[in-house]
Image (cartoon, rainbow, N blue to C red; front, side, top):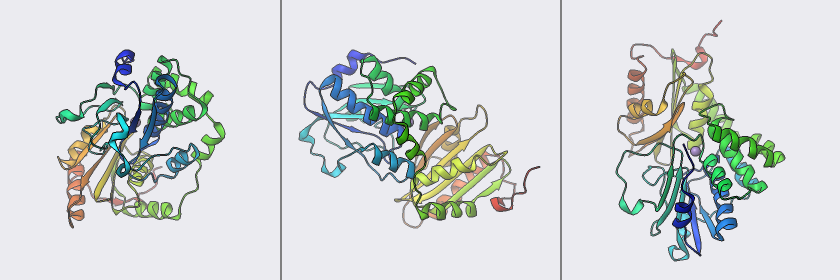
Length: 344
Ligand SMILES: [Mn+2]
């Protein structure tokens, strides 16, 4: 892990004009943090104005609150006039990823991301002038923090708060996949961030639909010994699938939690594990069996399978079958979560 060539980054940028910044669909705090900080860097160090394009609704209450309080404004993707921009920057994702569709007609200036790269070939038009992709970092916000530092730009309070949200979200408050770069960013940013705002972001009001969704998740959860499968039908948001996977992996004694739900024409899946040394990404790849696409590393992975007419039940059945095979529980009978006996 190291910092990129700063001159290469600088020379990928236009000398003047506006640039467009984007991230993956349904942006998370890491993507939002990286975007806000990149805007400050471009403006303070390079005198470049920028706009954000955010695709996919942000529905997780914490993330909605983060966006509102930090006043993260974006323009609709359909409203982008390519003539107004010199190019685009992509953070916390890569052009070949299935959940990422930057607006067309613009050169890709730079990509900054901490996910492992896709093995699929990339369309030549999507090759960036500058790429800093390093899966050693716990968060893209960590990378952007160090980029600001290297360019001698001190994050203002808003940027620090946004970046701090990103680092803590992706590293689970430094509990996972931490490097000294992540820890340094976390503690430096914590000092600079707006603490009142952080408290509000941590404790947002939750809509009634949230509790209904969680009740449904408990209803649908099947326990196969050390593996929990919660393969739901329609869900209120893709984020709720990740939340369910996160929530159930906390069940005491469990090592794998797979959640799925249909939303926006896709079957979203999230896999979590708290098994030491386990890697969720190859596991989820196997579970998807070549359908759709997925990404992730370490203890978490996510993906989606496109849904065609009426094949939801069949998709769920195939995912369940492959998951049971992977976890070696084909002959184990599922126990509903509510009937699992308390461990003594
Ligand atoms: Mn990230």
